[in-house]
Length: 121
Image (tube, rainbow, N blue to C red):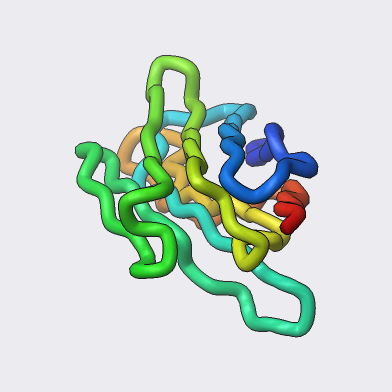
């Protein structure tokens, strides 16, 4: 069973840093685009940063210059380095990955269970 598991969340003071990880497991031929999302209490889930299979990245304006997305395909893992954290970054962070299970097979979208990030003021 293919799945994504996030880790690295926690409680950090404003100005601090955290590094989130999203590890894929199961029978995987290729991991395509991967994306970090977050959902704050009472708000809709929002896109934080995507990274393509070629390593092209993009960032939400709210995190640009503070967050860095990366991936290690050998480890089937995506990362989100979060620096200069602000209280408004408090949210559950989710990873999404588009995974191809076998050569020439279809691709499916998978979600992790989420990891809580809390930034205290």
